[in-house]
Length: 153
Ligand code: RB5
Image (cartoon, rainbow, N blue to C red; front, side, top):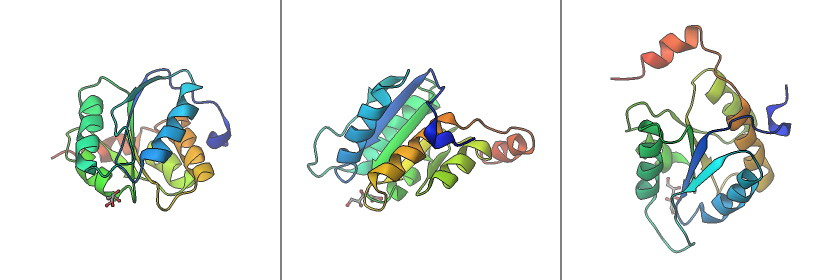
């Protein structure tokens, strides 16, 4: 199944966050998400003015860790700082994805619950495909259940 071309089946809430580098892509993806059957919670930033990515990563990761949203989406220049911060929260599995295939595996094998996008390295069309794959792809479970359990310290 080509997950990028299908409509996300996820009916729960998604929290979004970005720093200044990710602001424009976040706004674009928010428009896309608003066309789906999803409750969107935009936790900032609200402008392209310089900001610090950990603030938004922690805000989104907190929502995911506390079960208030099913998934989080974070956007910064590389996705890396966002993932570093988000993965400090227990139960959060944040994946930096530059390709649709990575997004698919992040879900099917790693049960990723936070997607980190790189606004400076990923074009808009690819980012949309990554996002849809992240929202649509189910976790495979089975042997992967045991492995993700081992992630927690
Ligand atoms: C901001 O310049 C940049 O460092 C940030 O967006 C991100 O790429 C950090 O990982």
